[in-house]
Amino acid sequence: MTEIELLLTGGTVVTGSSMFEAAVGVDDGTIVAVGDEGALPAAAEEIDVDGNLVLPGVVDPHTHIAGYNTIDSYETGTAAAAVGGITSLLTFAWQGWDDGEWDDSGTLAGAVERHRTAASPLIDVGVHPVITQETDDTLAELDALVAAGITSFKMFTTDDIRLSHGFIGRVFEQLADLGAVGMVHTEEYSVCVEQAKSVRKSPSGASATAYPASRPDYAEAMSAGAVARLASAVDGKYYGVHTTSEAAVDAIAAVQTDGSNVRAETCTHYTALDRTALDRLGNRAIMAPPLRSQADIDALFAQLGETLSVVSTDHVALPTERKEGGPWWESAFGVNSLQTSLPVFHDEAVNRRGLSYPSLVRLCCENPARTFGLPTKGRIEPGFDADLVVFDPDETYTISAEDNHSNATYSIYEGREVTGRVKQTFVRGTLVADEGEIVADPGHGRRLTREIPDWTA
Image (cartoon, rainbow, N blue to C red):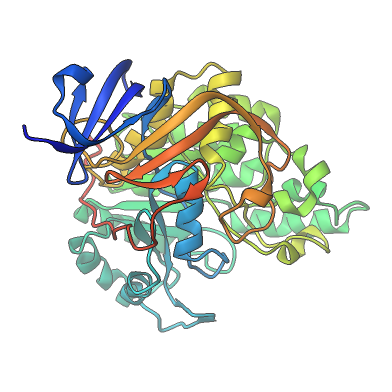
């Protein structure tokens, strides 16, 4: 081979199965060689990563960018992602939402198009359309969207955009024929409504610490189990988002008989924070579903790599004034975490609990890429996109919102000391983030077209 563009040397490569000292050769945005430096072609540019780890770029399948519930644009959200070692993300295109207004006549295709014409991302991005309308017209859109490389769809069983179980079953029936994925936010709506009424009447009911009781773990478990069964009844692919509790994990596992068509994720904040965080963070730590108990966190870790195959961020950027200054029910849901997810999860899972680095790569890189039909992402192998993260596992630092690239001006991890830091992030061979700073222009990112995912492996 003639001279290639880039060679990363002096690092330890981490894959989903092993760790080894090796150089990584990159040409035309693709990994072309992994091995002993002396056996690789000469490169126009060589970067010595100084003994650090070289990880595949993180694939985050659950983020909120440029939507009704976030103040992050593609520029700011993907900048935060790049600094945090995330090289590909999937966000949500909300049916009926367009520039500040809800429109009952809105289409899924219209939601996707709005994202396609949004400002330029720094990393590679794709969308999950969110189904908000129970109509035959909505079902009629699915075939064309899947054919165009949109191979996953989001639904809710609670809040104002909830769908009935009957309609969700119809969606799964059609998705099963197409091979596409149905993702569902699962909490039993009527239980949450009644519990919220009861909590608000209690003496301390306005406090953020009372919030988790308004959306209990059994409400999550009831809905998660029911939706998983709807999908299984038609042999559809079901992906349970942001699983928070032992009860919900058990409900999903009961349907996950062969491990193929029922899968689920948890999020970094559900592994790193329990509900006592509401004592010090107040409404800033309000998300749906809520933070749970330490026993729930232990149960989530016990199921990582089993029932729970992915760790995502569920990133939501909100202005501080929408989080603070009132009772919990006036707070918007969500926390920003694109920039801090990998360091926090690494510190909690690897440093404190002994998770292996290959397991981290499977949960954060390989599995989400496979699950959502991204065949060139998530691995350090020849032929894969050169999405690479240089990660120092030993550097200790304190998280501060002053460093945010997101438009959010606070962090639920403010003041948290973590060991493990993203040093450099490459997207298709181009350095986009270096030592916490953006060094590439918006627009480097591409819009992702996805394949029908193969869940048989």
